[in-house]
Image (cartoon, rainbow, N blue to C red):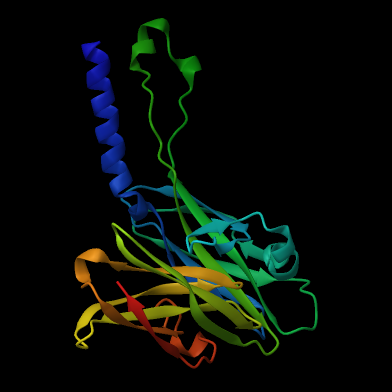
Amino acid sequence: MKTKSILYVFLFSFLYINLSIINAQVSINPMYIVIDKETKNGTVDVLNPSNEVREFHLDFKFGYPKYDSLGKWEMKYDDSVMAKKYSLVPYIRMFPKKLVIPPKETQTVRLILKDLPSGGDLTYWTRVIVSSEPVTPQIDTTTYSKADSGKIRTRIILKTQIIALILYHQGNVTSAVDFNIYRTFTDSLGLHLICKIEKGGTSPFLGAYILKVYDSNNNLLIEKKDRVTIYENSNVEYLMEASSLKKGKLKVELTINNEKDEIPEDLRLPFKPVTKVFELEY
C-alpha cells in the first residue's frame, strides 16, 4: 500500500510539473491568420521552443465561441448550419503536411485556398489546431531476451496543442456590434452584468472591451479590459468583483472596440467604438 502511495505521489508530481510547462512545447505566429484576398495564400510559422526534437501536426476544425443565456461561453465545434455557410475547412490546403522540427527552430507552413464559392460579401474561417509530441525511437521488443525484460520501462508522452484562427474576407466585409443590458444579478462574487450584444455586418467581430465602474461620487472603483469575440447575437457576462465595489448606486461605462493586440492594425476591419453608460444599484 505504501508503494502505491509513493507511486501516486510521483505520478501527480510528474504531471503537475509537465502540465505547468505544457504551452512551452508548441508556439505559432501569428495567432490570427488573415489569408490574402488576391493570392488566396497565407503563412504561419510553427516554432519548437522546447529542447527536444518534436513532431507537429496541423488540423483544421470549424468552431466559434458560443454564449449561453447566462453569458458564459464555450467553443462550439458541431454547428453544421454555421459551418455550411462559413467554414474554410473544405477549401484550405497546407504544405508541408508533416513537420519534424529541431529544438528552438521554426518551420513556415504555407496555406492555400482552392475552389472557394464565388460571390457574396462574407468572412470564412476555421480554427487550426497545432499539436506536438516528442520524436522518440520505437522499442523493438524482439531484441530483448527474458533477462533484459526489466530494462523496458513505460514512458509517459505528453501531447500538447495550441489553437489559432484563420480568416478569409471575401468581397467587401464589415464588422459591427451594438449592446444593451439584458439582466443583472448579485452573488458572493459581486455584481454580474449580462449584456445582449447584437452582431451586425458580414464578418465576425474581433475586439476588446473596457469596463469602468464608478461610485456615486464618481470615484473609479474598477477598470478592466479583455478580449471579446462575437460570431452571432449573444448574451455576454461582465463581472464586477465584490471586493472592489461599494454598496449603493454605481455608474458602469462599457466600451467595445476593435483593438485586438494579436491582429495588426492594418488588418482590422473598420469599426467605430461603442460606449454606453448604465446606472446600477449594488
